[in-house]
Structures are given as C-alpha cells and as structure tokens.
Image 1 (cartoon, rainbow, N blue to C red):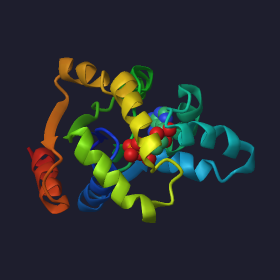
Image 2: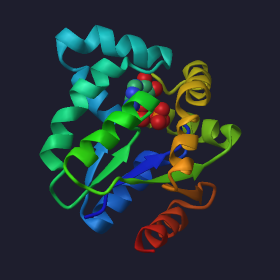
Image 3: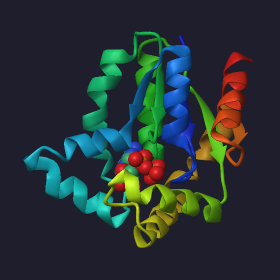
Image 4: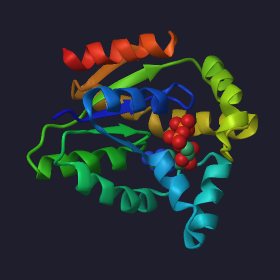
Length: 187
Ligand code: ADP
C-alpha cells in the first residue's frame, strides 16, 4: 500500500503528476479541486463553491472535509491513495493523519513539487485557454499564490518536523519529474 500527498503551489504540476503516478502504481487519484468542480455542478452547492474558487480563496475546511470524507473512506483500504491538492490547511492535515492513524495505517508521505511563482504562473496561463476553469486567469492566480503562501505553505514545516517530506524539482519536463517521483516512491 502506498499513500502519498502531492504538494506544491498552483501550477506546479500536481494534477499532471498525480495522474501519472496513479497509473504507474495503481492508486486512486483524489483531487480536491476536481472534487469541488464536480460538486459545483450541483445547483445547491454551485454558488457557494464557485464563489470561493473564482476568488482564488480556499473553501472552508468544513465543506471540503465533508466532501472528501466519502472517497477517502471508500478507497483508504485499497491499494493506496494519491492526494492532489489536499490537505491545504493545518486542520485538514491533522484530520487526515487522524483518519490514517485510526485505521492503524502508515501516514502518507509528501512529495513537494518546487516551482517558482513566475514559472508556475506561466504554466497556469498557458493552460488557461483549454482548462475552462473559472480561476485560471492572472488576477485569480495571483490571489491563489497569496493564499498558498499564507495558508498552505506553512504546512511544509509540519511535515518536515515529522520527517515525511520529499523535495522534488518541478522545473524539468513532465516525464523527468515523473521519473524523479517514481524514484522517490521506490526508495
Ligand atoms: P491549484 O492547485 O492549481 O490551485 P486545484 O484544482 O487543486 O488547483 O484547486 C482549485 C481551487 O479549489 C483552489 O484555489 C481552492 O479554491 C479550492 N480547493 C482545492 N483544494 C482545496 C482544499 N483542500 N481546501 C480548500 N479549498 C480547496
């Protein structure tokens, strides 16, 4: 069983890499952003969720935690889960650890995809035309970065203290980064 978290700023390649790694190791790819975009198709949730997404803000912990619990419970005892975009707050991280601990499962390790804001912004902007996402525009990307620095990046310390963090350079090609991650997983 392999459980891991793909971490990093917007545009670092979390989704792309999570997809490749999920295939390679037969894991369940759990993307919180995708989960929210799907949930927003429900008219009763659309306004609330899209309000946060289009502003580049995190949705409240309560909402994402409620949404993500079902797939976690469903897949946690399978071959493994690759978390993409989750957790993003200390509260989410602690709760996720508790879920694993309560089932006597080893805690997931973290792959941190490092990429500078300038390059990450370029990537988001170049995918913007095809992504159809309400948050892939320059103004919102800038806000997403701000939120990343304020609320999500501090999580790295939590994981470093626990010795669960692996740093991966996000600058090389998609294939090269995948290779690096596979290498780290096999170690
Ligand atoms: P990116 O990592 O490129 O920002 P995501 O698809 O992971 O893209 O996230 C898109 C948006 O969904 C975020 O800006 C945020 O509004 C919301 N979101 C995703 N994951 C979470 C989470 N774990 N907690 C709160 N909000 C989230």
